[in-house]
Image 1 (cartoon, rainbow, N blue to C red):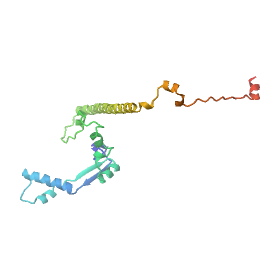
Image 2 (tube, rainbow, N blue to C red):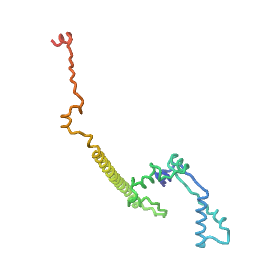
Image 3 (tube, helix red, strand yellow):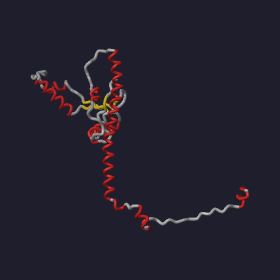
Image 4 (cartoon, rainbow, N blue to C red):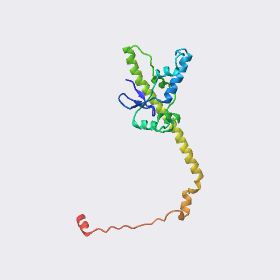
Length: 203
């Protein structure tokens, strides 16, 4: 089962889900022409024929995969994923998620074919679970470190504000000496006369 990544938000796209957009415009053709010129230098393309006729035989379509219509609409509006706050590109760029870790190397695509081995497949499945656990633990520690910096910053801001407005805070002794700073206490007598029926019931 091949799991693809969303082009916009980098979330996982499972088989049978998401939207696929194929673009074949000037950008892709420019890529093909550059590729053809590089092959001409390597003498892989016959230079006697026209370059354009051979380039059309090598047409490559750019495929974009999206996890949901939200990402597809943002792509059509030409929004930059690095400037949208809910994408993984934004979070990695601003230090909210891990960017460098040894566990990311296991997710790389390897297009070379491997001969099937049952023991190797079992060990791989066991290793995947361990790697996921290690990655989640490291991500949690990364978030804790990031929040510690924020808590320290909030504490410093609160201390600075307290130092600037300390003159507004009065000591308890000053409040006792000057009664005008406190609200006057009012004593209210509450009397509940008992009815004759309640007295008779109590007796």
